[in-house]
Length: 247
Image (cartoon, rainbow, N blue to C red; front, top):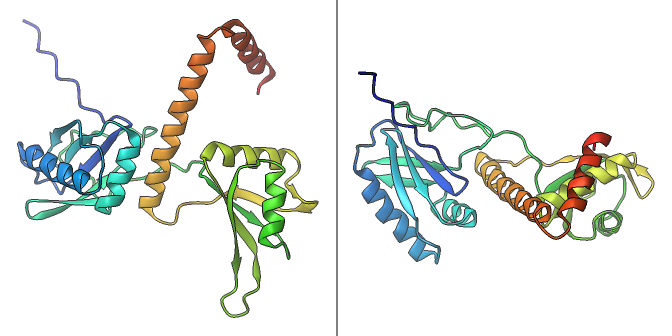
């Protein structure tokens, strides 16, 4: 007889929060973890987990109904949850990276996040521009600017020559960056340097990654809806044209 097929390794979903232990999580601990997760959700008015999956002595998956709940759950727990006598780290899986989640080693110090666009843009070489000047210039490119913050010197209170522009979504920030760069990186006639602002902490980076994945899923759903709708042939032809044009 042939060898029995090995079970397919468990994988997280976009709606999964990963609990990472130190290699001492016993089978059956998922019941207590689910109870603690439910308590946190109830106390914070969040949807409770759909299921909790034991993966290994170092990993447990907590599956939520929506990605927004993952973000709020991570914020409510401050990215950690106590299991027995050990404080475990909570994180969000990075869909662009492959991990052997079934491994027995601890993942607590082995989490990396790929650099992605964020909803905040850093603009350098703004000279003596005021926040209103930057806001007006960006609104000519993307009307939905959330806020502008110019970084000032603590002692002189004068501008340090750069600022942060925040948008309501990552897609809007991407549009602003691409349009300004296509126009020669000119802001009200002034040459500036534009880039996506990097999250300051790993927690912020992972939260940003969750939002990015959510927006990608929404864009994919809209694209599929368009391709299957009344004007499907028109959209298919347009996408084929863009592909040939290298857009």
